[in-house]
Length: 143
Image 1 (cartoon, rainbow, N blue to C red):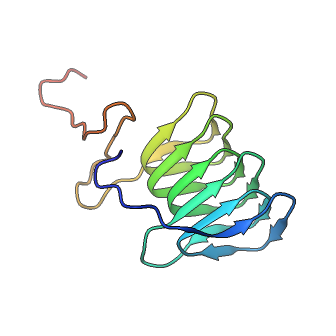
Image 2 (image 1 turned 90 degrees about the horizontal axis):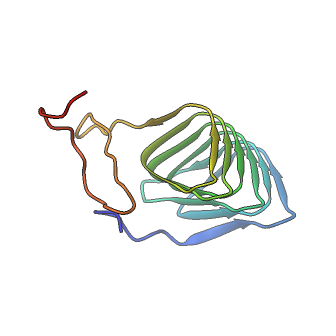
Image 3 (image 1 turned 45 degrees about the vertical axis):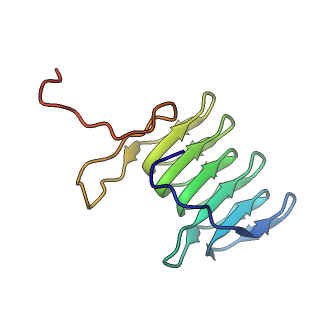
């Protein structure tokens, strides 16, 4: 469990397997995509958001949400404000920005990956799935 991690918002919207959507898609709370989306997928609202891109899903466009879980294919930039989870069958063709990252063996990213700088610390936070704590380089660490 990640420190300070909030309860996940409910998934209220589903793009089912076999369905396709063309155009920009905006959502609040949670969205699960099992089908195809051509256009940006953007979480709106002040609360937490969850986006799940399932194994057989395809998204062609920008992706932006608080917590993003990818196990399908994304062609476009991905920005996970809080946490990005790349499951074993994830395929991303585009640049990736994340608050924290969990990447499973087999996940593929063809693009730049960079942590988002948090305004409260001005340094990225790295959290490992096996040892969730804040890692900060000490002055005695060798470069």
